[in-house]
Length: 201
Image (cartoon, rainbow, N blue to C red; front, side, top):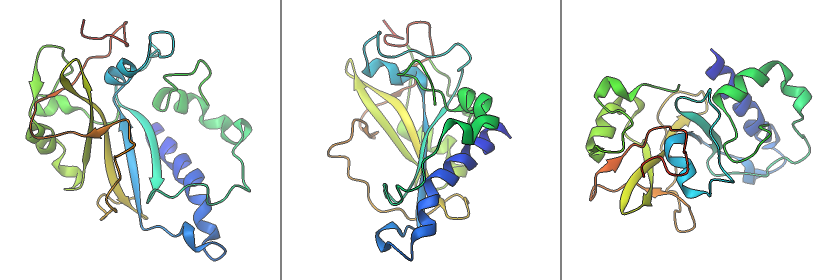
């Protein structure tokens, strides 16, 4: 329920722009992209001084929810901390900030035998099979670390009614920090440790 509340907040904030479609056609959108971030991999891309994982974070966290890549459609409504007072506890737990001191379990892959580890890797097909209930357009994104392909986040396309599956436009990864995971190499799923910038020394 807490996760759903956080998602609803994201939908509310991201889709407020959609109420202005009559005024600005550039804000029309068809699909949403819901991104879940894996903290065990995230901090390897930052120095130890910039990134930390709160002790209560033990699984997937929310990265964001974006309508068809649209942004800045409506800058007349600003979200304040007072607007989300009753959601603060849930947001800190499910949507923590990993790179800021002040912060403003998705699913268990273990059912498919995929567990966070430094020593074992998994195939691209293994992940996609485990996530088959989320549709065929699930996007696994990775980062190359020490010659390893490590899972960073998973993006799930949603329709306007939040049902799974939507034919989203092709994403441009030319300037993206993360890239789509490839079939050419196995994927590592790093554990969440006390040394998040170097979980697998």
